[in-house]
Length: 296
Image (cartoon, rainbow, N blue to C red; front, top):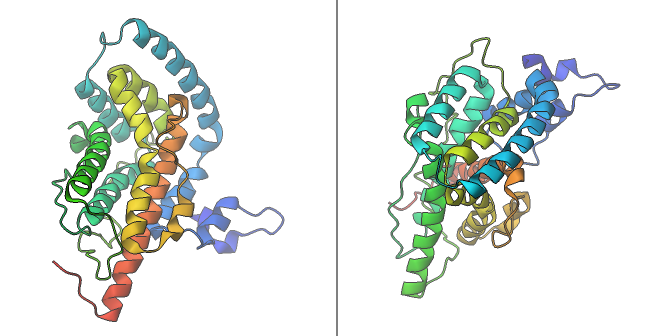
């Protein structure tokens, strides 16, 4: 798949769209993550399996929706769900897709830490999620990710309201929590069975998510994707540069989307987190080059 991103393979009569997007620098993104995403988009799984899996996923979700209406608490086990997710990621998801999934938890945790660390007189005890292996997935990783987002927004705004303060631009930003490396320390299996692309994996896992979680947990997980706009606004207020808000696609959290679009919006959620994190990395590197130390 390396030739997909090789400029020497360019054919002007048949240009590769993923090569064009890989070379384009208008959207900030970690280089290795961008490589993984473009290879993932060009995989045979994404080309041929994804359309079929999407149809299966929507039909399955419809029947689970009916089942949950009549038997809302008959099947409810986050532990079983996360064991299924861990097993599926280990055995069937490609290394590129696994990198994108695992990296998302690291990136998301660091963004929340950045916001909390740059608002004066606010103290938020977070629960950073930085999985290193598939065993970490079993500890309700995906569920905790959704809970973290909502608890962060609630605790942050409770303190802002109680103390009568607001989020403002910070001149000397604390970026100690922002990781600059490529997350190369995580190794993923690459057997012949590890072929599923990112979106196919998410489409396959979403019905299991719906089945094994309570209706409240599943709806909260789906609606949390639209908090991309909220988190982006917090970051823009601190950075004093709202330009990156144009890169956010999951918007208007007070008007929820249907859960049937959750899989696609989850990919957009990951993209929004990656672009914001890369902007923070650039800011940190610029501060270092200027010789300005961040406060501790």
